[in-house]
Amino acid sequence: MGQQFQRALASLRRMIVSGELAPGERLTEIPLADLLGVSRMPIRMALPALEQEGLLERAGKRGYRVRQIKAEDIADAIEVRGTLEGLAARLMVEKGISDKTLEGLKACLRQGDAVFTDGQLREGDFTAYHAMNMRFHGIIVAAGANSAITVALARNDALPLASANSITIDQSHLAQEFKRLHFAHMQHHLIVEAAESGQGSRAEGLMREHANAALKYTDLFKQDSPLPDNYRVIIGRPG
Amino acid sequence: MGQQFQRALASLRRMIVSGELAPGERLTEIPLADLLGVSRMPIRMALPALEQEGLLERAGKRGYRVRQIKAEDIADAIEVRGTLEGLAARLMVEKGISDKTLEGLKACLRQGDAVFTDGQLREGDFTAYHAMNMRFHGIIVAAGANSAITVALARNDALPLASANSITIDQSHLAQEFKRLHFAHMQHHLIVEAAESGQGSRAEGLMREHANAALKYTDLFKQDSPLPDNYRVIIGRPG
DNA sequence: TTACCCGACTTTGGATCCATTCTGTCAAGC
DNA sequence: GCTTGACAGAATGGATCCAAAGTCGGGTAA
Image (tube, rainbow over all chains, first blue to last red; front, side, top):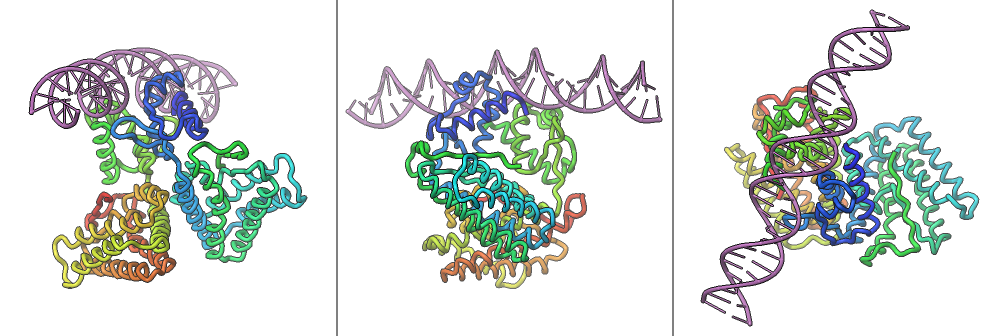
């Protein structure tokens, strides 16, 4: 759509996710318009969009407030993500996995292997893993060839920490985090192995379990403040 | 939100679902505003909302067009619905089904039994079944107590014929349709039996399969015209 | 002193106006 | 004859204005 609308939407989204707009804070159109230097109109378009994304909720009959994201919300979204991605994995196998898809997945495996085989942490390892991980999940969802899954996942992934497009790293325990991602990558291997063998149901189960690789960090949200400084969030855009 | 917006949204939704606005038809704001007797503003709010619901799609950089709903889209949405409702059923069992929930489900079973036990068709049977069916599915989703499932299902159900809130009846084969619904109701019985016995995984599988009770009618959409006259669609609102 | 009602102010929803951008058509040039 | 470019018309995005609805506070009466 419009330039101003896109800018307002992106700005508000960023301010909410970063905690600049505190959970529970009431948002009214005019102050936001002044703050962002636009008229009320782009704000009026953006607020319902952010409500759709689950970042805002209506405050009574008038106005919106920033939604308090609870650990439970993220855990719920991760469970749904695992279920839907599991379904996609099974459908991918049942419909017959194409050579191109299989090659794409194997390329992801190789890229992940390259990160982990030298056994030591290097600058850029996390972003490299993250990029590969997004591709891996994206390929499976696309190969599931079910439009409703794609749509449902896109909406479910609006909660940043629930999405396969973001990973959260505890920078004060890098070695441990490295092992955690390594384990997740071994799950990638098993998923591809199952898919290649035509084991759709096994692929589904593995994919479901794999979503839990992110679950550990939902505890962080039991505090109502933003993430502690030692955590780093990497968020990417699908595709 | 506003009165005019709600009216515009409802009117447009009805006109799209009924085929009054043909699939592929291009929608521009001013003619729609004139048609509904409102200003452009409510229309401008309604069109993105209908795009979110999957009833419209963007037509290039300017304007929207009515989305062509394919049989495949509905089949996809039904598969996702079965998967998510299955997840809800399992969670309901695993979290411990409450007395109130169980009693609600059993009430649905009794209401359904009342429809089928006298063995003959009566006026209002389909609407009675439909009301019960909505409650049954609603109770299970609510008892799953996973907010992401609720949200995902609400969005997935925007396609009318994919939702548990609508049933489609072939009025030229009423006796056969009666049997079809009877079979679906027997699945309800099995689901409750599994839930009561703590068989979460069995409940999940049954619920998944149960979604297919609606699948038969996706063939109807292979024609690009609206439904034949002998089909009757009953659509309800959840809650 | 407390509860209820009335009024003023704030905020949102709707309409209209203006500017920008896109699209389609027609003509000219290659 | 086909392609490209320019111009005109139309549609959208953004801003401002107006009306209606809601909320908050104060005052009065019980």
